[in-house]
Image 1 (cartoon, one colour):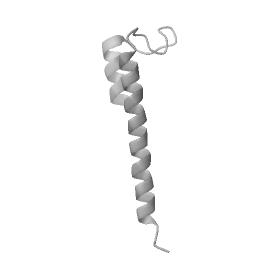
Image 2 (tube, helix red, strand yellow; image 1 turned 90 degrees about the vertical axis):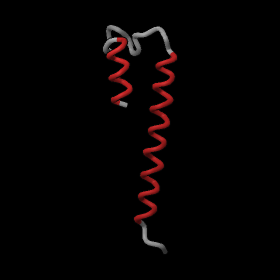
Image 3 (tube, one colour; image 1 turned 90 degrees about the horizontal axis):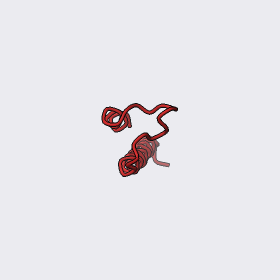
Length: 59
């Protein structure tokens, strides 16, 4: 998230209350950011669940 957001801010400016949530009028990059964030979150949750299940002893 940090890498994607920081690279956006370098190209388009920082996100502030004055500039709006997403200062660029081109929303393709916002959509791509949201998709990457969503997929990263799913991946993190999946890895966590796998780790939890591996630690549980078999019944």
